[in-house]
Length: 198
Length: 196
Figure 1 (tube, each protein chain N blue to C red):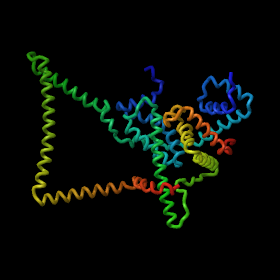
Figure 2: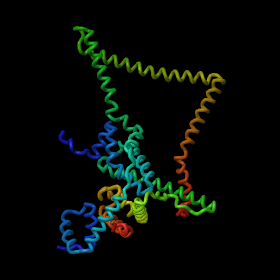
Figure 3: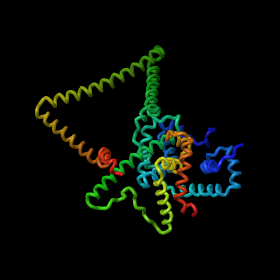
Figure 4: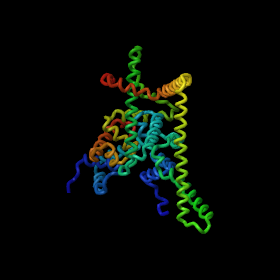
């Protein structure tokens, strides 16, 4: 069996301190440590280093977890998660069941289950059409309003001033946020200073 | 439930968060906050900046959680995001230092080591700790970057060798070798503190 050299033992010591030394080398290393005082003190130094680094760790600020959780913005994937859809889906199902019960009870005896299902489907169709109609009417209404605005020069002027004010407001808001981002333009400048900056 | 006593893995927690249990992200925060803050602290040399950046990183990770690929370890992914964020911040700081030094030069003042905060000296009992902490920081900072990043990932991020290899896209043997050398350098520099 080949005996590992001293450097190998030192590498093994590092792995041992990290808990990554393969089991088959452990016995060999232990045996070597009995006879080699240099490796024993190397192991002590490595353990001491580990301890010093551990003791130098900073404490996490109290309330950090809460701070992180309360600052989580809604992520785009959240709208796709099943839990987001489960409540509306359950409400629709409940509505459908209630409608089927009511319609089935109203048409005593004569009508079949099929016609009840068709009636419930018809109700949902009507709801969808009403929703689509409302949406179209809203856009149509906005279109009419815009038509009226651009019809006369006075209202067009008022509208222009309004748009200008909104723009100024947005610009002032953007400029207020600027300090947090002000480093990015410097990146370009740094490229020029790259060599001299060091 | 048979698995009652078992802790869910990171990957299971991510799956649960993605399926709508937002609060479970808190468990991931609990698991990684200490390691993340300490890793960033040693990179940025400022504990407040480390907290701020750790929070930023966790928020960023949450926002793109659906892009997490479970074939890799969550910790590898988290520390990759953290490392990139820290490097960006260090780069930005350097620009500020360059800019401040230029201002000083123009004003005839002395160049300042802007990015090294002057350590706050507490009561006498804490002085030794502070001294040790500063010495550790100095020793870490003096390591060449290729060793420093691995030492930080191992000792402060507490990542196993395999994950470091995956994160840095290095062969496992190279990681072991660099950590070995990095530790030797660190040990030599911190000799005075190892005998305490």
